[in-house]
Length: 223
Image 1 (cartoon, rainbow, N blue to C red):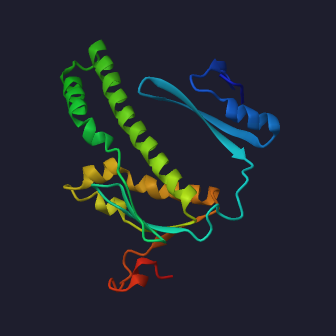
Image 2 (image 1 turned 120 degrees about the vertical axis):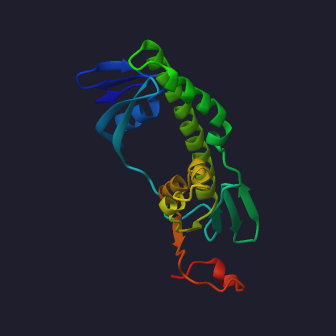
């Protein structure tokens, strides 16, 4: 398994051309700082994707670019993140809410698909159209979350977030769609590894621990 600038070579499939450039991975392979362990080929919304599992020698900094900086974040439905940093500045990050924006198109595509005869060519085309709508929603959400979490991990050494029970919150039928549209679970996952890459850390505040809300120290997690 190997790759060049615009191609990838896989077992049994041979050399195939890629839409996105693989130059960054190819440079690491040539320098010996990365090694491909496996490759997975999948199909999503009429597009073939190949994902590599790569072992990379990553240089993790011993200290953050802004040592001592800290921020507490609160995830919400109206705004994805409402944050307050160590100097008292309030930062609000609006979510992309792609499902809400594409809900009308999604409903129309879903209804059109349900009216097609099973096994027909029209049903296959409508299934592909519906899959593209779902894929676009997922891609917009993931792109917005990556931008928000990368910004926080690069600017703050310590990030404090509440340990939310996202699975339990989505059982509320009135809020499940809005919570899933914001992507609460992915925010915590992305912050977990991006803070390490930048020499920082992610702290989780216990949601069951009682705090004195009138005290300033209640903003920090009790360890």
